[in-house]
Image (cartoon, rainbow, N blue to C red; front, side, top):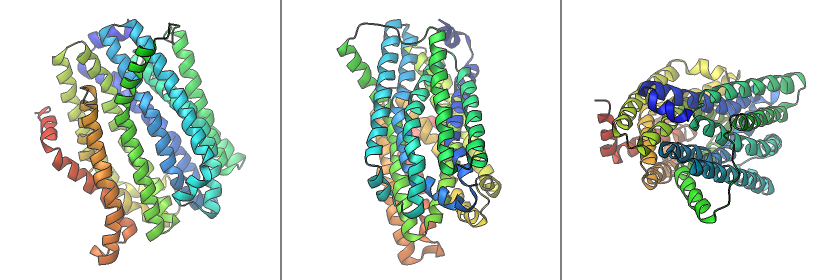
Length: 454
């Protein structure tokens, strides 16, 4: 099989590039849908600030949708890679089948549930007036393209696992170009506003989904008919959920954090701060995704060597990934600090919004190199079957530290006027502080990871 020969014949660096680079490109290009939407929303003239605030208000919902798609999007391809290492064709087909249908059912159910309680959810998120009108216009369409986005993401990951990682880049690039072209047409030519922005994303996601299915069918990799074994399907489903739950937990807790941050910003500041955070969170996500892609891409490689009992090559992959993730995260942090104003100019021309955003983005990325170590540790835990330990780490980072700090820090800065920092800005200190606390608690395991590069 082609995918098997790739793992056997390529060098470690070639495998890392072959699998991580397309994954990075795929994730970045996928996230560009959200970033492109934010960029166009920031250039809607008189309503740009309101549009950005609307995007910021619904951001926790969008993060939750992304979190849900990660359950089967990541786990299905990872389990397929393990089956490839074991050379079990029947298990590969059954894993694909269970993952695909589970992804379809879960994405449709979540979209429908949010739609039924849309008004109540937006009200809780703090939307009102013109903001809630624009938020609903975008969200109604987002709930539709979520189904195509979730299944498309899973299918493209499976294509990579089957030994065609370059396809990720191609389909991602074409999808992004489609998104940009239709954004220009709908937003600036037809003046459809935020609704046009959402429709552009819908069209690009439908292409993403359709292309993936056609490719898999033509390569003979699509789901093959087989008898339904309830016991085996149940076991596969449990395995998929166990593997994907960590990624889901990480992203869904980000959604909860985003929701609380929005509430704090509205309480102590204004809707403009929500717009500023919307821009900064997009930037943070874009710089984080290459790191996630690097670690996520090699999961398939590590899983293959783990499944084939090749300990030497497995350790070599781990060593190089630690080194590359550190180099990347340090370089990105420096670049964001030097070119923060120029980066923000891409998203908005509003000078007041830019001035609000500069200190926010600098606070958020200050411990980014440490975040790289945390993601690497989580990846190693997942691949080695320590999903519960990985879940515990993320629960501690978000539930024990970040979320409580988001609530407590603004109160302290407001009541005691600490360093003359406004509470709506101080809330962002919760992120670097929680990262540092996790590094301290998991210092022994982090130290073990750092030994990989020595």
